Picture 1 (spheres, helix red, strand yellow):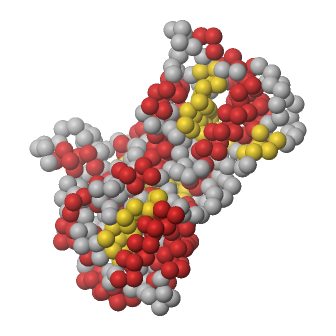
Picture 2: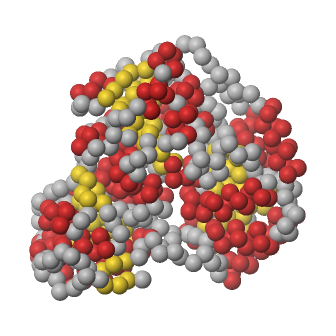
Picture 3: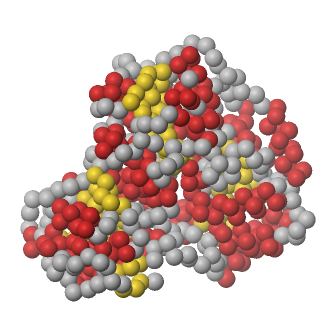
Amino acid sequence: MCTEQTIEVQMQNAAEFIMCSLRASGVDVVFGYPGQSNLRLLRAAARAGVRYVQMADERGAGFAASGYIEATGRPAVVCVSKGPGTTNLLTPLAAATVDGVPLVAIAVGVSAERRNQNAFQDFNACEAFAVGRAVKAARNCYAPAHLPALVTELLIVSWTPPRGAVLLDIAESVLEDAIEAAPVAVSMRESHPATLSPAATLSASQAVAALRSALRPVLVVGSGARDDYLRIRAFSARRSIPTVHTIGGTGIIATGERHYGGLLRHNGSREAAYLTAKADAIVALGTGLDERATGEPSQFAVNALKVHVDVNPEVLQRCDHVTNVRVPGSVAAFVDLVDGALASDINYEEWLHEFEAKRGDWSVQHTCHGQIRAGELVRAIADVLCDSIVVKDSGAHKYWVTNLAPCNAPQNSIASCHFGAMGFAIPAAIGASVGRPHDRVVVTCGDGGALMALSDLVTAMREGCHNIKVIVFNNAGLASTRDYEWTLGDVTISSFSQPLALASFAAGLGVGSMTVSNRDELRVLCDVLKADGLMLVDCLLDPSESLNPVVSWRRALAALVETDIAR
């Protein structure tokens, strides 16, 4: 997997070795924030032919690298300095590990002789991040001779399923040392064999038996199935199996397909709740099946045999109270095995017709009076969202957009899924824009999430990210938190005293901006978003609107089926 090759850069020190190795391994861009300790490494990037993108802070740098990886499928690295520069990476590293994003982080800490000597900004990041399981692997480097093995190991580990973040913490003194080694070239994206172990194959045979006898099967797809979405699409369409998805599985089945069943979540779609309540067999592919997806676990799909397929044994173990059959291994291999084992004439067209008829009976009341509602906004920009990379921040708007907006490919839907980090979307969109500069990138975020990351609009301008459009669902507060606070009594914490003037803030930075406060402005929004140029649109929405439909994740998900919907 690892080979040596000649690089047309004169090797002088360890900093250049690292950057040349990254370049030889297919890394084109490093996101980061400078400090005294990591300056040598960042200055070496240009000499190695690696683009350096300086973000507004380290947290944003980590999210930007994740956005780049998610949008392109190519590797990216984040580089930070010691102490608080490193600790600011905790959230993006933890989010990447939970969501299976192979983010490589390089932190430059205090010099080796000052470690554990009460030195300024000394912090044992490897120990702290590894114990907290924020990363798959963390390694310290105190001598340049160790770098070839450490760089090779961590690049491979990050991309080996189950993918996740890794951390290399280098002593600052190492960077200026000479190193007698050619750069390493690691094939991080080398195809891993889609296989199942004998034990997994035996478990998969139980799934085959269940599908042979099932009348109402349902597929549930998550972020761990994104790479295999074409296989899953073909299988589910050929067999006429209704398919639902978690946030991470958005786009695996195109929203216009007849077997598309919507978002499985306590604030997801009635269709998904209905399908899982009626199912007699459920096959979950690459998803964690947490309580937000299943509702009360003991009441989830009580009539179904539940099969869980995931490459990560820890995920399977955490969900063993929900599932009946667990298959550790490749989603692709499982789908191929099951499809090949089923007779060619087995399909579930009758069940799909039943679902389509039921779906036709449900109605959604579209509200078009008073202040603008979130559903109106999503419907108004649906044409733009359909052919864009949509980067969703965390908050109520994420579920409005996922439930209502079209999506035709998983690489066009990016979000902090299982970790749900606010302030993710704007920096992640910069990463997506750097990786796919010719595609429109649309950010959807709440006013709370926007406040956490508006400083990176300066980064977007500096880096020429003219394809980014930021749409703020401004409902004068933290809508998801406010929904919960209403159940506690009056709302005093999660509402803002008045809507924030975010368009004015953006204009002050020199970013194109507009405020949408009425339906006339809403009607022309699509045309505005299709124009070239970085832009922020501040959409003033009804602050009294709550997530709809929704049931408590402590209740049976089936209750969602009977919920009235107004959007």
